[in-house]
Amino acid sequence: MASTSRSAEDTQRRLALAVVAVGLVSFLVLAWWRVPWSPAGNPPPPPVSASGVFTPEQIDRAEGYAAWARLWSWSALVVSLALGWWLALAARSRRLFARLRGGWWLRVLQAVVIVQAVLGLLLLPLDAAQHEHGRRNGLTDQAWSGFLRDEVVSWLIGVVVSALLAWLVVGCARRWRSWPLAVAAAAGGLVLLGSYGYPLVVEPLFNSFHSLPAGSLRTQVMQLADREGVRVDDVLVADASRRTTTLNAYVSGFGDTRRVVLYDNLVRDEPPGQVLAVVAHELGHAREDDVLTGSLLGVAGAVLGVGLLTLVLGRGGRRGWPAAGEPVVVPLLMALVATASLVAAPIENGISRRIETRADVISLRATHDPGAFVALQKELAVRSLADPTPPAWSQWWFGSHPTVLQRIGLAER
Image (cartoon, rainbow, N blue to C red; front, side, top):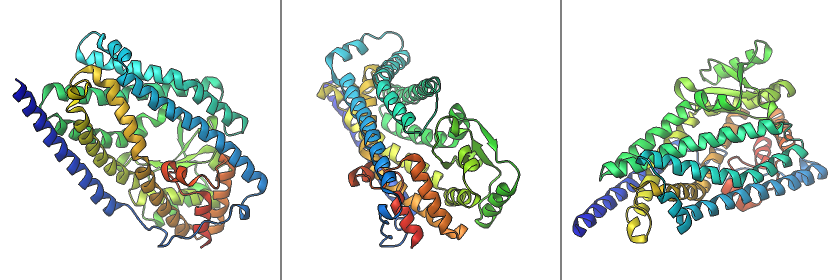
């Protein structure tokens, strides 16, 4: 029996290494093929001076807000990771999860709900502090009822996503010796399905949308899309001002779920030249299929992550950890995924910054109006109280976009 068990472990280890190799090679090939590594030239233009763009009062206010915002967000990150690993490894919590009753799928769901409930309750004060910080600084006027409603919706989404992942891992591990292959394939498929369906399923939970009304702005937007060779069936406006005073726009989905979305306060408050600069940026994402690029990289990353996860869980019994096919493994699985997301953040955000820079270049070339682009970036930064000079390591790890000073430097060149 021991030799049979060891043989099964060796088989799973070889499969896990193969999955890691496929995921890593796929990610590297996709990154080489799809990511613009020098979108602004080599070397890129230097950032401008903060004092040449903002007043001392604006700089002090932005830095003061950002310092507290980082404190709340980093505190939430530390608390969630520490608590997640305690739930995964502490003897007391493991005894709790071992006492769950029902079929394996029901025990998995119970474990996910318990972990998410504990995390949600302990992180709620930090999220509330961040919300109050935004209210005091004029970044949101959302009522506490709306804040709590969004928190509940986000929590439910977290439960659904975590339960799907846990069911996938535990169910496949219970059924097949070659479960790493099955989980890798299914995880990649779920990433693509999630990216495709996100605009239809998740976005309406937080915002209502309507078409950009007929008029001069809509005509200019559609003409800009035609010049850039981007098929746009519609441009949507989200009622984001009920949640935030900051300005934004985004593109999501791919194929027939692709949509360009503008915040209602952007359309309402900003001059047409600045709105078109935002639209051109988002059309650049659409033209280059950046959402699809991110989805394909996500698939490769998911395959790589499943392989690494299998290597960690495959010999769990020898480390005193639960086996992958037992529902009690759920807290450990969730802790590993959360830690992997943090570790992968510099890679993910480094790629994102290059893609965002390319979209800025496309916007500048499409509109031929660097003045509007600079005015827009200043307005975005002032409205969101963005730190013009964030700590270098923080920008490297968590910054998904270039800094405002880098973006203005690009426009001025």
